[in-house]
Amino acid sequence: MNIKAPRGTVDVLPKEAQKWQYVESKIKGICDKFHFEEIRTPLFEHTEVFSRGVGDSTDIVQKEMYTFEDRGGRSLTLRPEGTAAVTRAFVQNKLYGEPNQPVKLFYFMQMFRYERPQQGRMRQLNQFGVEVLGSADPAVDAEVIDLAMTVYKQLGLSSLKLVINSLGDKESRANYRKALIEHFTPYQEELCKDCQSRLQQNPMRVLDCKTDRDHPSMKTAPSILDYLNDESRIYFEQVKNYLELMNIQYEVDPNLVRGLDYYNHTAFEIMSEAEGFGAITTLAGGGRYNGLVEQLGGPNTPGIGFGMGIERLLMALEAESISIPVADELDCFLVSVGEETKQEAVRIVHDLRLNGIQIDKDYQDRKMKAQFKAADRYKAKYVLVLGEDELQNQVINLKEMATGEQIEVPLEKLVDTMKDKLLGGE
Image 1: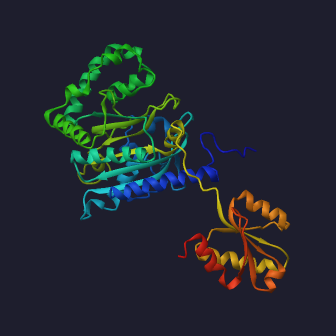
Image 2: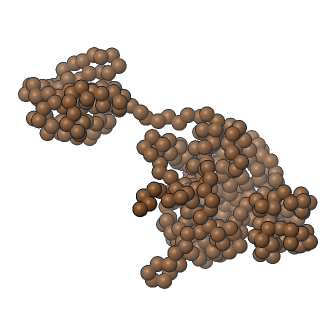
Image 3: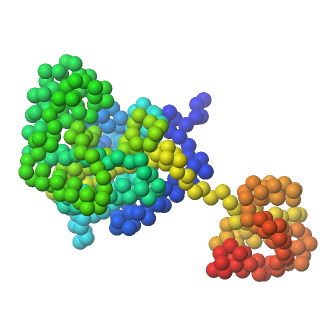
């Protein structure tokens, strides 16, 4: 019997989970400042949401999706990415009819991709992402990039590189597509099997190939920037101008195409340049996807967003030796001695918790000395000691562990005393 976690998945244990909670809390606070609202979508969708939205020619759809048939014969897929799922929710719930536009959304989602597990890239991964639907203003592109950079910077990361590119509008992409096919066709037999099929389906994906990235034809491939029409070129210049106004440094990489079919105009990636981070340096990526809402049955609605891996964010923090505060102290621990004190101990713990006090107690019938050792392991600030004599006199002993000072407190005044010491009398 195999009772280990499936390959490509990991358990997040309590101390590590505290780091996740800290990071997620920080991100939520930033989203609030940027006036983004949270959305939560189902863990699985109809397969068509991803095949139509992400693109049949992508590696995600062709190789990486966890797809199954339910008892009704419907093809369902565990969510491999967030944008298509959020766009489906946007269309189904008619958020395009909301009076406040654009609709600015953020999410924390678990994604599932069948790929070779490696550090920071698992088969079950966790993503933070944002989507802005309903505006074609290049200032929105800059704002989305600013939000991603703000998350990293406010968490303390400094070894970052922002890379941007323009994929142009439909006309620009069509002209560029022809140029790529003409360029790569003489080398087609020298390319990997995936690129041989991509060349006709989606030639821009050839530029994104990990297998053929060192092929000589890659170095001489035409640049998308040379095929942008005036409208696309002006749009890209405006995005860059907004980034410069916010003092956000960037590099333009004409080969940055991203791996999904729905991207157009602005595309970007944020990478870690921290020493020892690893060969795969990308922390986040995204871009504009005008037309995706229409593909999923909605009205003509422009959109832009990004996805950020939480696992890779934690790796980047570790690579830059940035410590995440983890609460390893307990406010109060209750030591009870004797059978008659057990019921009163339960009531005391309950009352203190209702009044905002963090407290725990012994549940293993240990001797007093062992209970004090447990309080030390929990790094309790205060220890309450309730014995049968104290119970009879309706008092409890309160010991401050840092100083060793010990006082006797009437049980009826215990809540107020602890609130005064731990909560400043709130």
